[in-house]
Length: 279
Image 1 (tube, rainbow, N blue to C red):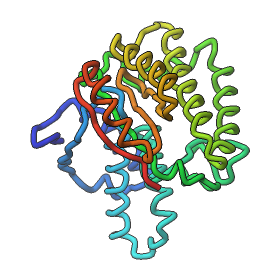
Image 2: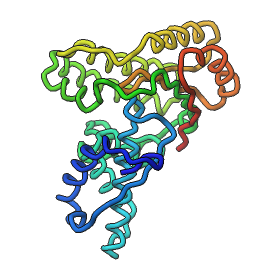
Image 3: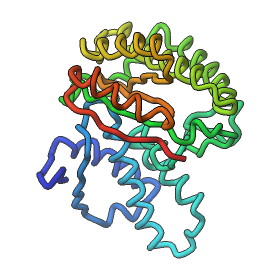
Image 4: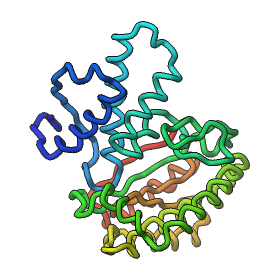
């Protein structure tokens, strides 16, 4: 494996495990040797889903191979479903990265077609305000995390609060369906912030307990809260399993907000990555 042109042996164990699991569903993989050359425009293992991007890319490559072997494989929906299923064997988040736009992974009684084995495109009405969302990523710490996401997930198995956490997540999904339909960005933002803080609260109360967030993560959060009260702007944060911060806001407000971000938050982070979510 090569990352940005340099051999990267630290990725091999996880990748080999992924290929081993995938070979049960794609037996032809056992007859090949692979050289993987990859690159990324953001730091890996730092809590902004680098494993999701890598495993979903690998799954799509495998399915492109399968399409060449089986001429009957022409249905795009099956192609994407199986790619999502395979990528989940390497990273849960990866199964959502197969599709553009809003995606659902995990069975929920209120979402038709949802299941635990692969992700699906969100099947219901989406208000136009959510079809173009700016996502500005603040890299607070680009170093690999001391506790990787996979280990963090394992700590949830015996967590005393995990059952209530699952109930809360399901209730929030019901709320989100309504929010996505009506276009209430404030309620959307409050919900994603609550979800992000709940995730980190679970990690802080696990055994062993630890913190993914850094002091500058908290500086950013408090600064956003103060700015939102003063400006009435729709800017909200979310956190993955790490110290880095995603800022989500409507693309219509981007010109004003992006200027404010560089003027007020740049000092708290090592790098700013500008992106957007487009359906």
